[in-house]
Each structure stands twice: as C-alpha cells, then as structure tokens.
Image (cartoon, rainbow over the protein chains, first blue to last red):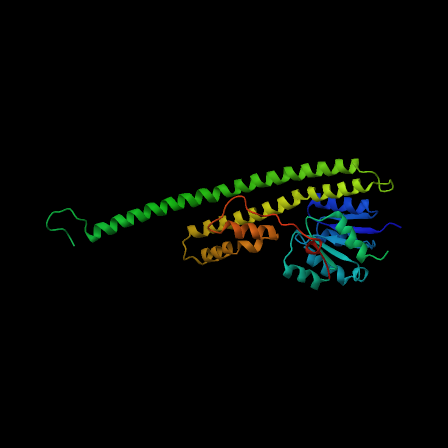
Length: 123
Length: 178
C-alpha cells in the first residue's frame, strides 16, 4: 500500500518540487499552504505516514504546526521533517523541542531527502 | 561684539544667523530627501514583487513540463535519469531561495521607510529611537547563512565585488536527525 506524505509549504514551487520527489518515490502526496491549512487537511482523520513542513509560513508556522500535531493522538509519533532555508542552531533546537524528527536545509537534494525518509520510516 | 573700526567683520549675532540659515537649509534638504525616499520605497517593493511573481510563474511552468517529461513511477528509470531529475529539482529551488532573499530585502526597505518617517519627527523622538534600534537589528531577519555572510562581507571597509557567497553544503550540514 502506498504511503501518504503531507507536504506543507507556502511556496507553490517548493511544494511542487517536494511533491514531485515524493511522488516519484511512490508516495501519495497531500499538499497544504501553511500550518492552519495542514491542520484542516488532517482534521478528517486521514492517516499521514510522514509530514514535511517549511518553517516560516503565514497563518501558522512550522514550529506551531508541529506543536499542534503532537497534541493529537494520531500524530504523536508521526515522523515530521522540517524543510527550511533556516540553518541556525537555535532554530534547530526550537524545532527539536517542538517535536520535529529531523531538519533539512534548503535547497534540498531529492536523493538526500529520500535517504532520510527511508531511515525514519518503517519499511 | 560689533565691529567699531568698520572692517566689516561679522559679529557673533551675524555668525549665529548665518549658521541658523545654513541649518535650516540642511533641514529642508534632509526633509525633501526623506520624503522622496519614503515615497520611492513602495515603488521599489512593487518592482521586486513583480520579479518574484514572474520567476514563480516561470518555475511553475518548468515543473509542469518536467512532470510531463518524467517517466511514470511504474516504468523503469536509468540511474542517469534519476540523477538528472535530482539535479533539476536542486537547480529549480533557485526560485524559492531568491524569493525569500528578496522578501528579506523588502522587509528591510519597510524598516528603512519607518526609520525615515521616524527621523522626520526628530532624533529625540521615542518612536525614532525604536526604529533606529530595529534597523540595527536587520541581520536578525535573515534566515540563510549565505545572507549573513554576505551582510558581514558587505559592511567591511575593504568590501569588493564579487562577494564569496556560495559554500558547498555537506550531507551532514543539510540534514539533521534528532
């Protein structure tokens, strides 16, 4: 069965590129424009195997999104990767504290992101 | 003291009047400059927004075409094709990166505008002091290491073009698992 990934980014081109990478790797991809949109997308109970989210977004940023998701029983242990241009240690720490599983700095290498996902997703 | 010997030397009062007139001229010139800059900043912002919108549309068009040219997931792909697709995706991210950098310049222009507006009220104004402090914290708005390095390089006295801004990222730099 195909695994489902939720891709959250306010940049449509970036969403397209992450979705393209994951679709090519066999994932079904659900896209969201920002944190609030992502919360709406998961509200119907759809299971997500992995979530890839940007950090700086309007409406709700990536850190707040992770905090919200971690409050939900269905997403307590779902792997969540931050995908952002931000590379400072304090931001990474904030991501870790919020409950992120990993941090990838843009521009991302599709092969690297798939390697990271393979490492954290059960086969 | 007035010149009693008729040598035409200016008195203290004359000098003060000249200085005051000069200060007024400077003040008027400054106000004209600040008002002009304040009105130009929104135009510059619009120009930059138009550029980013154009590049976004171009990047979306490219992605649509790349999708159309990509063999379906079920079809077998050569290692070369996969490697080339990865390179295309890497290269295509220039649009998002450039857009973010320009957004940070836009934010700086907004701060600069508020700074000028505050200065027009006078440097002793509390609001002006806050705006000056905000502008001095411009670097805090950067998200990319590349932006921080460029900023640091640009403010050095011996700054020269081109600025070395590209630094190769290793896998460990770009991916961290907690």
